[in-house]
Structures are given as structure tokens and as C-alpha cells.
Image (cartoon, rainbow, N blue to C red; front, side, top):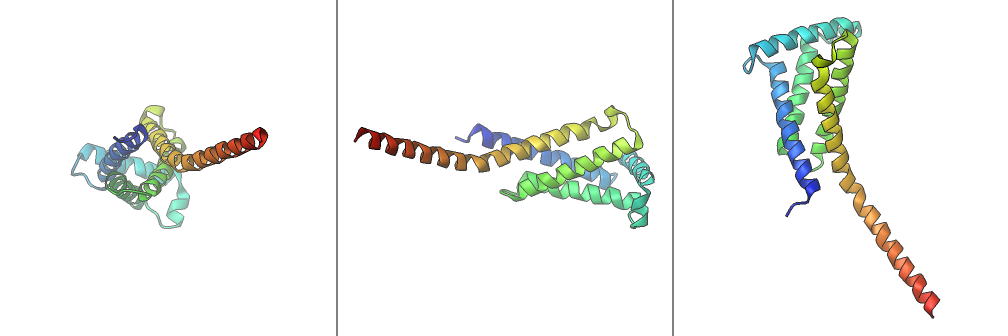
Length: 161
């Protein structure tokens, strides 16, 4: 039977992956929802206006929306379907995207209800990454505990003789 940690990571990976595939697709095409697509276009225009430096380096609101949407779809697919370390990389990239989105919302002065989803999903991505990384550190601690236990046993043998 799978450990609770494994079940949590798989469930979070699958749910977050599907969410980001959905949200990225909305940014890229009006096929899922014309209203949401129009809202995304409007929002990214305001982000591009608030950051004039983007135009200086050749990034328009359309390109910014497509870059972020493509990152979300790609990383969402990785979180949903690809096993192993690539999930952690995708998780980290999506966390950076969420930080950028939170920055954009703050920059244009949006109210909390407009970016609460980015905040919540940023927290979920952080939790998933921490849980995944926690398992990597645990074997080292168990090894050091076993070594400590062996050292304690050897000291007891020396004291008894």
C-alpha cells in the first residue's frame, strides 16, 4: 500500500496539473470560454501597460499572455503525466509563474478577490514541493539515526567490558 506522503503528492500533482492545463488553455484560446479568454486579454493588456520595460525588450501583452499560458500548459502536463524529478522542476516553474502573476496583480492594484486563486495555488504548489522534497531528506536522517544507534551500542559494549 502506498504511503500517505505518496498519495498526497500524486493527488496534488494530478489536481494542480489539470488546473494549470485548464488555465493555460484559457489564456491561449477562446475555445473553452470566450468570456474568460476576453478577460485574460484585458488583464494582460493592463499588466503590459503597468510594466513599460516589457515593451522595451519586445514583449507585448499578447506575447506575455502566450508565454505564461504555454508555461502553464506545459508544466501542467508534466505535473499530471510525467513521473519523477521533472515534476519538481515543473512545480518550481509554476511557483515562479504564480509569484509573477501575484506581482502583476499588485502592480495594477487589483483587489484580493481577483488574485486569490493565484495565492491559493501558489500555496498548494509550495506545499507539494515541500512534501516532495521532505522525502529526499528523510533517508539521510534515518541513516544518521542508525549510525548513532550503532555508536551507542558500541559504547555500551565498551562500558560493560
